Length: 171
Image 1 (cartoon, helix red, strand yellow):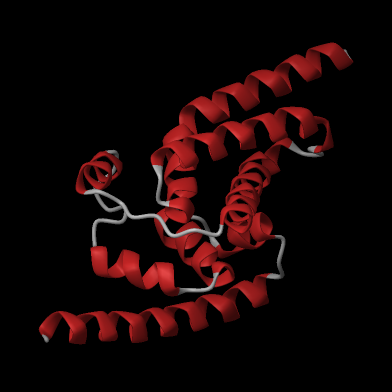
Image 2 (cartoon, rainbow, N blue to C red):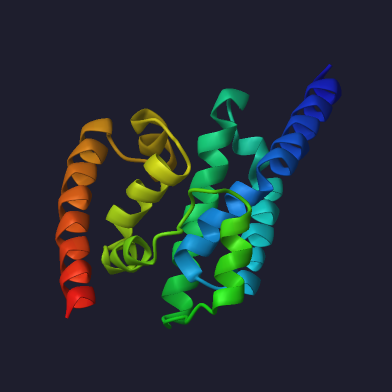
C-alpha cells in the first residue's frame, strides 16, 4: 500500500511540474532576469523537491511547498551571485509571449526591481501568479497578517516608484 501511495505522489508531482513549468520559469526569471539562470533555478528547485518530497505531509500543499522552493532557490541564487542583469528586447519578447499580462510594463518591472525581496515576492506571487493571500503566506512561510501588511507597504512603495518613473519619462 505504501508503494502505491508513493507512486501516486510521484505521478502527481510530475504532472504538477509539467502543467506549471512556465509559471515556475516566469517566477524564477522575475528574480534573476536571465533565461539560463531561470532555467537553472527551476531545474535546481525540481531536484531539491525530488530529494525532499517525503517531507511533504499533505499533497494539498504541493503548490505552496514547491513555489516556496522556487522563491528560496531564486533568492539563494541572487545572494550568491549579487549582480545586475540587463535584459535584451528579444528575451523580453520571448518571456512575455507566454502570457499576455506578465511583466509587459517596463516601468512596472523597473519599479518591482527596486523593491526589497520580501515585498517583491509578495507582489509577484499575489498578482502575477494569481495566488490568494493565504497561499502567498504559505509559500513565504509567514503569517497572513504579515503578508497583508507587507502587501500594503509594497503597493505603496510601487506607487511611489511608478510616479518617479513617470516623472523621469516626462523629462
